[in-house]
Length: 114
Image (tube, rainbow, N blue to C red; front, side):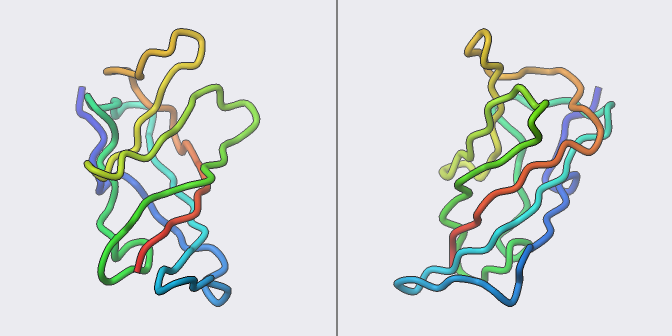
């Protein structure tokens, strides 16, 4: 099976006109949609799109305050060093691996950058 890539992650900026700027950093709320039911979770996380997709021109510091649907049991963490979204199974504490990601999985986060 084919693994998810950055091209398979759709980024939508929310509240574009209401960005917050603190100490030269910008904060945007973003919606991330990925998965089609056939593409699999790659080893060490899903590669994320480049910083320009989030509205930044110099760097993406990270994604924080990740929100998910109430029926979504997974734990999501952004890997800043590798620009990847990592997903863990809470019951086992093991990272998701090699399984197909459900269609149109949607999460919301705050993107921080410049």
